[in-house]
Length: 178
Image (cartoon, rainbow, N blue to C red; front, side, top):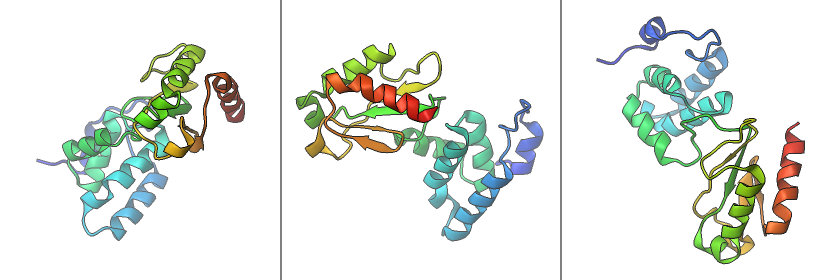
């Protein structure tokens, strides 16, 4: 039996910050997505991206309330969320670093660049800095092989990275977020 959004709101514990329910803004945007789709599952990716844009990541509670609201099973939404590298199912830092770990980047120094990022931030791939500023998540092939090695951070592609310029780039990204 599938629960309605209203039923789910009654049984989900509220943690005081309204993260266990959709905001009016989210509802408006989801309704717009649903109105333009031939069937609810067609909005799965966009709905997950919308939740992540508002909240930073997609928690289990968010997955449940989104499922109830758009009438797509939790399992189907979770399979979409875990398939796409840019949907985060755990909390991430303010700045997510996505250095490419494809073969072209690796041949052009990507392994060393990723090691320099880890060393500068004192984290390994998949980890977040203790201050919650940075998360390091390498991605396979960013499609910019002619600019290798590359990284995406703050929705921008950074080409021709070197071990020498990575510390300065990270410092600049941190300054731009302040």
